Image (cartoon, rainbow, N blue to C red; front, top):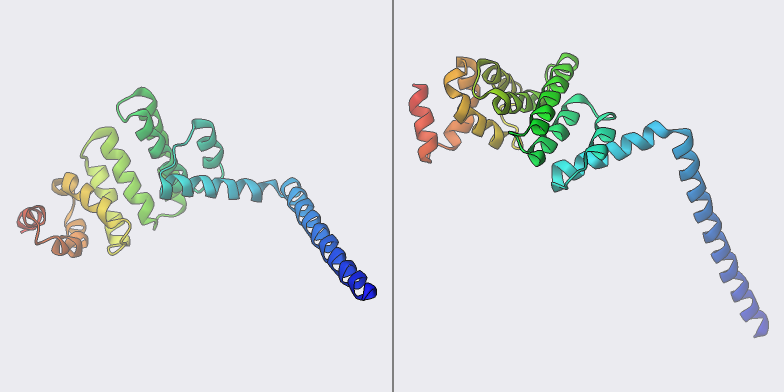
Length: 198
């Protein structure tokens, strides 16, 4: 009986020791990995920061945003600048500086990835916030609609932008927006826009 208890205790102690060793090994690999591959750690931090801002609407301080933006693609970096501009106030000097920075990021990103509907939509929004309705903003929205006419996440903001930019949009942009307009045809706003398209 004493032998069975001793064997059970030894087995439990061995399992506990093994678990502790595995935990220590895992922790050391994380630390070594962060030191050896700091870029991947920083990229993960940037992605988490972006998701917190985009999905959770978490408030961000400027230093955190800038560190994350340096590791993100230009469209996502611009989104973080747009979020910070909203927090600072779109009419304040700090907010407008962030909007101009976002516009620059989007220009750079669209040179690298011209088929990015999110970047074109964000560019339209930034241009409207900076200078109101303009042909450049309308062209950006039209490109976004032609690239991704059925994107459910972009649809609401594209529709809101179309309300502002409709007179400046070209025929291709109007036609690309048609599926969304027909979905809203039951509303007074949808009927108004459809009547203007004829």
